[in-house]
Image (cartoon, rainbow, N blue to C red; front, side):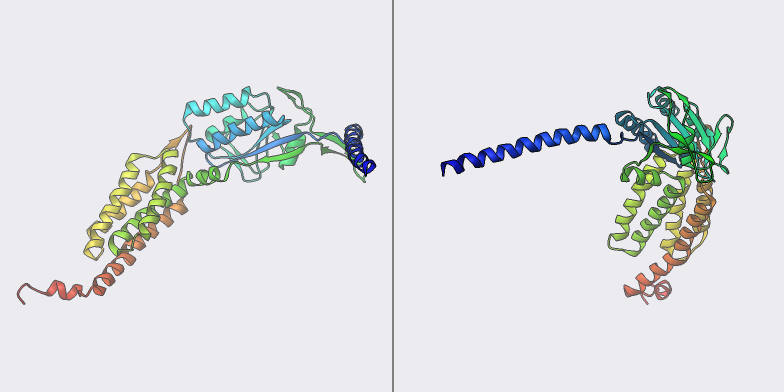
Length: 348
C-alpha cells in the first residue's frame, strides 16, 4: 500500500516532466524545420465618396497594418470624390505619407474610378496602379495592373519607405516560361458592419430617397390615421437621412424647397383633390431635387438621375393617386359621404 502511494505520484510527476520536455523539443524542432510564417499585405477597399466613415476606416487600417507588421497596406480605390472637410482630408493624406508601412494604391477593378480630390490618395503612395478600363482624372505615373493580385506582385522590388519590398518570386511553368508568383498572403481589412451601413446611408441616392420616403410616410400617418406604424418608420427614415445629408454637401435651399413641397402637398390632400398646391409642390420638389447637393472637394456631388426620377415619381403617385383615395375611404368609413356633406345646408 505504501509502495503504491509512492509510485502513483512519482509516475504522475514523470509523465508531467516527459510531456514538458517533449513539448519544448517539439517546438524547437518545428521552429528549425518548419516553414517561416509568410509575410502579408493588408488590403482596404475605398469605395464611393470619401466621407468620415471611409476616412476613419483608412486611419484604422493604417493602425492595424502598423500593429500587425504588415509588409504593405494597399488601398483598392473606386471613388468619385471627397466630402470630408479639407483639413480632415489633408490630415489623412499626411498620415498616409507619415506611416512606416509602405502604401500602395490600386484603382480597380475595370470600371472603377478615382476622380477629383480622390486622386490625391495616389500622392503619398509608394506605388500606384490601375486596372484597364478605369477612369482617372490624373492617370500619369502609375503602372498597369489588371488585377489586385498583379498589383501585389508588382510591389516586388519597389524601393519603399521601409526598404525594397519582396512580394514575389520567379518560377518556371511547365512550358518553360518564367512567371512571378506571389510569396505573401493578402488580408482584406473590413470596416465594422455599422460603419458600412452608415457609409451606404451617406451616399446621395440613399440619403435623398430616405428623405422622400420619410416625408411620404409622415403624410400617410397624418391623413390616414395609421396607428403609429407609419410614423415610427418615418422617424427611422428621417433620422438616417439626416445623418446622410449631414455627411454630404447639402444645400439649405434644396432641402427647404423639398420641405415646402411636402407642406404644399398636404394642403391639397386635406382638400381631397389635386389642385394648385399639388402643382406648386411638384415644381418645388423638382427644384429642390436639382439643388439639394453642392460640391465636395474639387468636384461636384451629383444625385443619380435614376434615383431622382424614382423619388419624384413615387412621391407624386402617393400624393396624386393614393392619398386622395385613402382620405375619401377613411371619410366614408366614418359614416360621412363627402358629396352629401358638401351639398347639405344647415337647417335642411
